[in-house]
Image 1 (cartoon, one colour):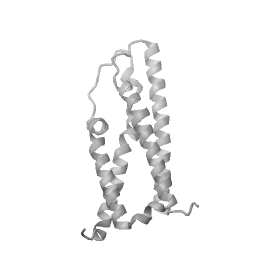
Image 2: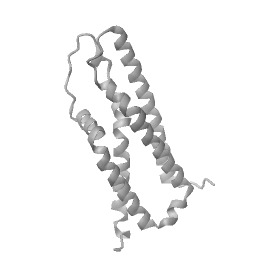
Image 3: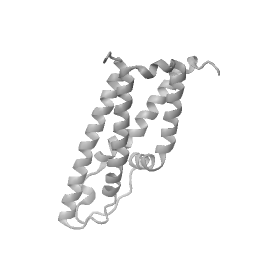
Image 4: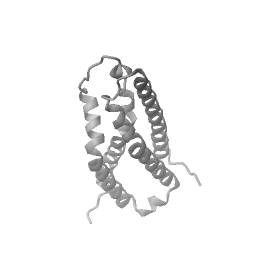
Length: 162
């Protein structure tokens, strides 16, 4: 096997970008849901470039990004050695990331899909229910952002936890 230690910075940077990219739609899409989208008489407007890219990434890019994340993670273990997997800060970070991914893909993603389909929002009660759902999704995004921040702190400080 070739020596990958010279590629460590590139592998690490790629791994970080992929890890964040996997969760970016779940962190940002809830904040694109605006009340004017369901205002009475509002016509459907096409998504902008950024919103369109996030929607595509959430719908089709997660498998590719997840595979790249697994590959770069494996390469990092090869470069750093298997003892890295015994580090408590890494184990906690991986657990938090798994929790964030489960919430993002099993809870938030289906709810966002329902909120993005707005053709059933016709009455004031429907609009209020839509607004409440959008608000809940923003709270979930705040929670996911907090988890990502904690992971960032753990990964950068590498504290001795136990």
